[in-house]
Image (cartoon, rainbow, N blue to C red; front, top):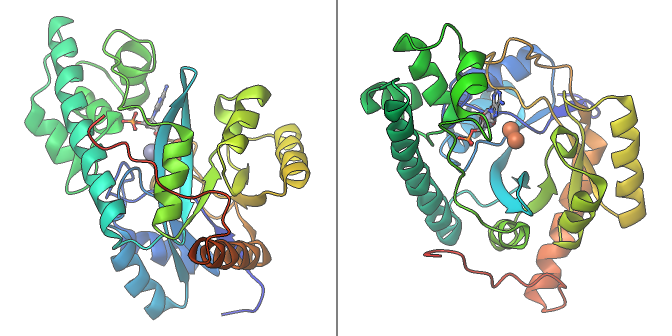
Length: 296
Ligand code: AMP
Ligand code: ZN
Ligand code: FE
Ligand code: FE
């Protein structure tokens, strides 16, 4: 393992909607020569421990992560958590709640699909999802298997993308709540891929909600966007993060190993997180985490 090296801070395993098991993803990271990788499954931390064990064997540092979905003024915003305690009871309680809500949502989407003349058995979606959190990508796979659409993207385009006839929104928590959950679990909260759909005023709102960092490097960000998010990071004293958002090759354009940041940025993140945890313990933190959204 080198003292320098590159890091991918945004990956998904088959514990959420990625295709590869966590240990395989870590092997890919080792093959790509990465020094560290963060596992950031949607609403799920079930892949982290296996990845850590494999990382120890292969000399790849595995950072415990998660990706939460929040809603702000109708925008679907993703918040990444890093260095979280993946056994934290309150975090697990929240994730359990989100995953149950995801399952309820799948039922509702399937009802809509049936009404549209495209019945999909729940069993297929469950099989596609496997052990982890269930979501629209698994429904898209099931729509292909059931013969209603010829390929994955078409399922989104015709039925389940935002605003399409079988779309159902996810459970809504605020950016402040997501930041609070992540902070309570001893982690850093970072705004994911702002370039995917967010305007600058919305990004500023999320910054006000207390995120510690912003994702600068992401496949959806062009040069101009990277520069803009770097400037915002400097202006607001935020950490700069980045990664591939790799789903194991689910999306045809996906590349692994090409969207990385320097390990020095991870060191900065660790320093910031330790300082934040210390400030929380001594009661000097500005973001005290008391928000509860369970049951709302
Ligand atoms: P969910 O968390 O169940 O809402 O699923 C979100 C995931 O679905 C995202 O991470 C993407 O991988 C995928 N997704 C969402 N919208 C689209 C779209 N319009 N086209 C293709 N994939 C999409
Ligand atoms: Zn995903
Ligand atoms: Fe995301
Ligand atoms: Fe992601």
